[in-house]
Image 1 (tube, rainbow, N blue to C red):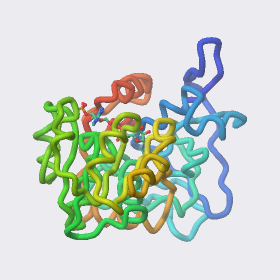
Image 2 (tube, helix red, strand yellow):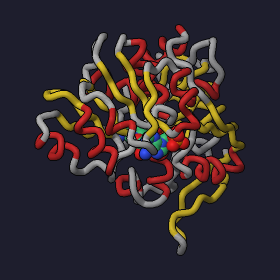
Image 3 (cartoon, protein in one colour):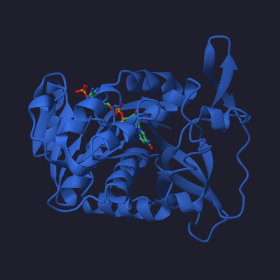
Length: 311
Ligand SMILES: NC(=O)c1ccc[n+]([C@@H]2O[C@H](COP(=O)([O-])OP(=O)(O)OC[C@H]3O[C@@H](n4cnc5c(N)ncnc54)[C@H](OP(=O)(O)O)[C@@H]3O)[C@@H](O)[C@H]2O)c1
């Protein structure tokens, strides 16, 4: 099978396209023929020696990627039979290995692809959608009637977070630059705030929850907007070290968080897709042979929705 392996080179970690034997299956695993892969900022961080790289550096071969949609071609699990269409977040945080034509996955990390969505849409609605769901529901305990501010509401995580928060009955404000204002409001957000202006500083100071997907200065700009006892959830690893301490000093709760592969949560995401509650926005589809182009797009920091790689 075709796969992209990550190799240490003089100029840093590089992709190499190669042929590998099909992965063998352990009990409880299925072999999936990949149809679409979702690309995320964690892929870039890990390629560049950060993110999950310290955990994976001794893997040989090291294959990046964690989210996919595809077709089961072999099964050592009672959950799926050959021919079933599945999608999910594989072995996160760990060795997902989705940058390949075939991927061995624990059956528990996958769910059935809803019939009303494509492989592209399903792959898009894995890591970022689970992150939004787990941070809002499990960490934040977001309830109907509460006020939430979602940073980078036009991005991968943010555009799902807006849709989930609205579905849960919250009042939702979202940040992006002016060019993505209509996109954010179109997701259902009640209010848009342009992070490039002083609109954040002028905003009401009564949010129950802020979801920070940016880190650094965005943490400092968010704290004054949260009511006493409220919650700041910050997800960009490497840019949110001080969040707990800064929040504590201001009488709010600061939480860091890492998404986890989770069967029950993926079932909720699949049912949201099936019911049309979640609609992924795919702004770019790239061929497998052009993986580097997908990484360049994510590296811009200005992707709208998701970037997908097609096989
Ligand atoms: N902890 C975890 O488990 C976890 C899980 C998933 C993601 N993450 C992290 O969360 C971060 C976001 O991921 P993502 O996939 O959502 O990223 P993304 O899709 O690349 O985000 C791009 C979006 O960010 C907006 N943006 C850029 N700078 C901004 C700013 N200063 N304020 C507000 N919006 C801004 C851009 O809008 P404009 O073009 O309008 O500027 C763009 O639409 C990454 O650091 C990622 O690694 C962590």
